[in-house]
Length: 401
Image 1 (cartoon, rainbow, N blue to C red):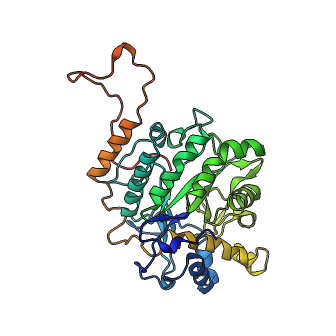
Image 2: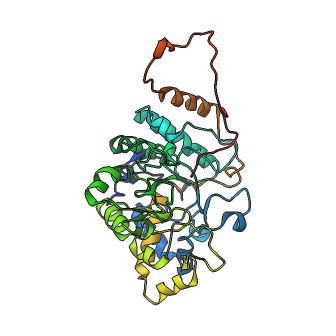
């Protein structure tokens, strides 16, 4: 199985498909000492139906959880079994959502112009460190959608329009992020290549184009051991991405061999029963009402979803699979054995550092591409005056999620 060989390395060493913490249960987990698959199976077997269901949906951060513990995505843990909360935070270019005391990194599109796997790995490590210092254990990135529409609002957080380049760079980036015992979440799966009407548009893509152009970067992330994948808002050949069986169960989990979990973009689930049966594992609620309904359909937190499991409309084994897909990478990547501690790692913590500022400057410098040196402007004279336009910095983590 894909987890074999992980238990032969020391803490933090990248082996096989995941970076794993082994040897001792740093967080006091009762499930240490066996292989990841066996640990996950034993843990899931001990969970009640309500504990399993609790892992399948995010909570409304600002109303259900107090500062400084809420993130853009919040899934409570199961303390009696040693399972920590899942705290998901933007974004592809470091800690975002206006959180303070973090490094404002160059855009991912900028860094892609370095063509440097080593730089991407170092950047991934640094971003992972800052996320963990903020208490995050799932970083919502990288974004590997192709920049097919140049005026799309989020081109800056992609790796450009070349699937080969994106595939080559996402591998070291994922490994770097996950080397500090958090999970990356590659997004937005799949064909989310425009922002205009992205909640309703249908990306109509034939099989060959999809596999040759749009899928390779996601496959590379899976090969690098990414813990989670975010499904997109858009439809795929008329069916919403987060309940598209061919995209999720066939292409990603079947053909691609993905063993982690699929989480929705915020508000991208449209109907819980078909999405669960098509391969969705976790939803992030957004703008749901008190009955956990949206678009006139039910979410995973709605009592009707639980009833569908009890009456067999959804096999109970499917729920076990959903939870297992979360627990296995949580164990393999160290989220269980080496969790952030809220007393010292939360949204108010200082995450940036002088070393990271220096790395940001190095990355920006190595990513500059000169197309033409008209009038020999470069190298710039030592006494030359240089004008900059626009806001030269942000005080908080910015960029879209």
